[in-house]
Length: 338
Image 1 (cartoon, rainbow, N blue to C red):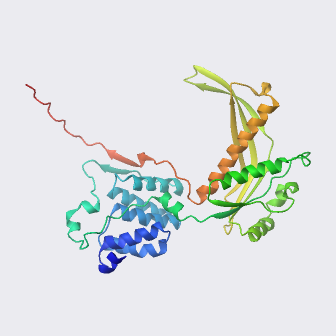
Image 2: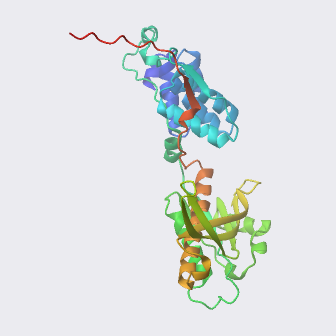
Image 3: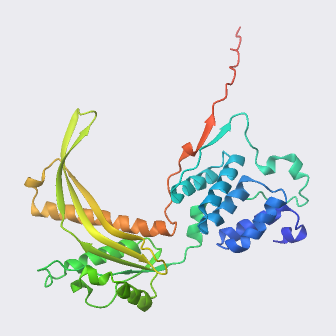
């Protein structure tokens, strides 16, 4: 900040201040600094990358993509910018034309260009760092409260100790809580005997949000566990393995406070496999284990859905976003040996 105050026309001084503001989740203040950076000739891949994060956070995917594209074009070998642009492509839901950069048209980073170094009066000024989107989201994440409404007990299990509702609700709570990102609350009341159709009523959900100051409300209803006999054909049919696929469908509703559309409102299934067998020879204990693993898979899917809503899931980088056009490079003549 002192470097910027000493020379407000220094684009990269402004960019460094803007970058630190972005890292600390203050995009509104950062935008002015980053705009000054671009206007004052600090047009680098890192600056445009950091700019794109603010547009992405604001939900402006088109501008986020455009700035990410330009940033990657300026610095095509920067893995952070590549990862961020790949992430924008995944999250935006619409494709962008792959960037094609010829091998003989590489762009040097800003700090390697001598003509710009001469225009920078502050020698101690460091190059602007390209921020990793996921790191910024995690750095600025503040815990949200998730209300997990207890499941309805299947008929005839109300007197069990513990009941299926208690067991499965606890498993779901632990799965969400163990991420370290959420506070999880189980509401008071006889929800284990309440019908799913009553739990998902708008007034009931609003009551839970108001009472527990909740950011998210999760409600689920078990359906019948299904076993499928299947054969896995591998190696072009040379190896066939019988296996059982256990499917546990659960009617699922996830509501975000203050958002009109639910995050999820349909059936979601957990899947578990048992190799080398068929359903007609499985014991009751085996079936129970498959059902438990299927529920664990379902709980992981719900957990990832909530994490992804807050951009806390890091996607694998699609390296084919950037495609290099192979240039014809003449081979060196073979060395003459004596």
